[in-house]
Image (cartoon, rainbow, N blue to C red; front, side, top):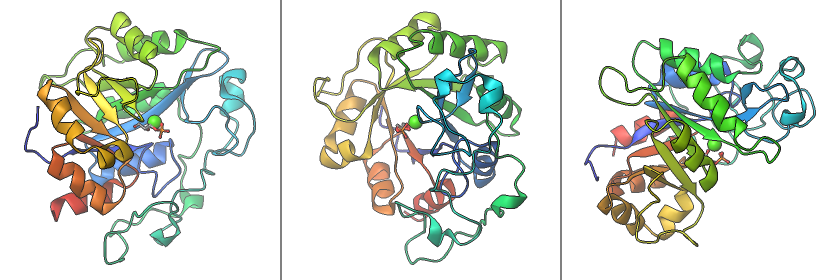
Length: 287
Ligand code: G3P
Ligand code: CA
């Protein structure tokens, strides 16, 4: 349903505009910046542990090389994960690449990220460590987990995910009735498996386009929310209304430009995933 509320701000891969993605440091900064939620991608190591990594290989983001699913946890953990090539480097956020994390007018955000060499939390982040962070935050912060789906492991990713959530007491809604964790995927079969293994977990079906999907905004019964990319929302803004008319919340990714943030707010998008939570919250506050 369209709520009239500003979108909840979900930190995409942590506060990844400011610090290396998927690191404990990036998630801690996102919480400090006031993000309502955290987004992370999960993959399975060769020995069956979920790790917070986006790519099939570790080459782009770490000091190592290799395919995540072919390496055991101890080999993955032997590297620093400070090389995503996108994060800001200290207070000079001009170095942020590929999007505008700066507020309009160009003045730097007031929150300066610490210099990278002083940060202790740039190692591999296990999914269970991130669950510990979410469970222990002073204010509630929701987690939006995206399962990547390596052909090698198929259903094992979702089975491990549900087991880890169960171990951390994060399958059931909290005291306020809100589910602490939502699971997302571009893979319909992955979302369907999550519903099968944990019927109470909210799910998002991510989509890059509406080709072959329900253009009227409806979703399959095993998906609770629609997850269009910002390109789709820009090209078909009415999709948000159509999804809401079917009772489906909309989670839009990855929204970094101030004009896109305002567009999502005007359309009544419920959640926006952004690399720059501080700048996004400021844009929403001034809108
Ligand atoms: O939040 C969904 C979004 O993260 C999907 O794209 O490539 O960043 O995982 P990607
Ligand atoms: Ca993702």
